[in-house]
Amino acid sequence: MSNQDHQCVRGSKDPYGRNTWGVPPQNAADYAFIQHIAQSLDPNSGRAAILLPHGVLTRVSEASVRRAMVESDLVEAVIGLAPGLFYNSSMEAIVLVLRARKPRNRRGRVLFINAVNEFAREQAQSFLREQHQQKILAAYDNFADDEGFAAVVTHEQIVEKTWSLAIPLYVKSPSSGRAAAGVNDIENAVESWRDSSARADTAVESALNQLRLRVTQ
Image 1 (cartoon, helix red, strand yellow):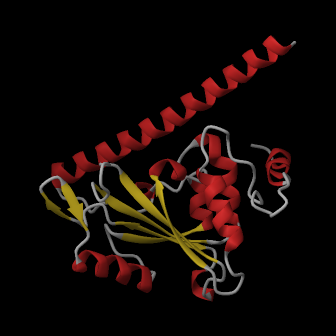
Image 2 (cartoon, rainbow, N blue to C red; image 1 turned 45 degrees about the vertical axis):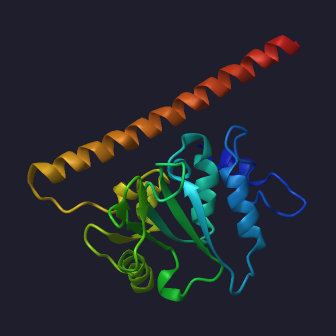
């Protein structure tokens, strides 16, 4: 995306300033929701923890909005949760932590926490026990690298990953033979599938728009 295109996206107006990062695609409202919350934060003390699907971290159709969000320096942490924590859903969700005014040592940086293995399983439901909650909270408070669990990433490093916030790109599982390699291969395959799916959605939407134009001509 050219700088001119990027500025055009960010230049869209909303009476309440809720699309300061750009207008989200019509087939995904997540970033409309995120921007509404961001705009509602107290400029000095505001914080938000937003539960979201993994797609917001990687969808190609939302890349320009995601880029502007990172550049705003409101994103303090991205926390990946275990599957099965929510009734009637087995999905792995993430928590996006926004902070209006970060401490100086956190500015220009994002903390990634991979808590996908932090859960207890009972029958068909997963739970975050006290020890799991405390481990996640400690990582957030420490805001430091913890091999295989947490990583502090600069905005420059995120640029190198084309503004993707996919957690496995930044929090590497410690290698331990074939098992670890297999897990990494699966994670990479899942991320590739998500990226391909997002590209396919964008292509379909573009084709539909072209058809609509032809029908109205």
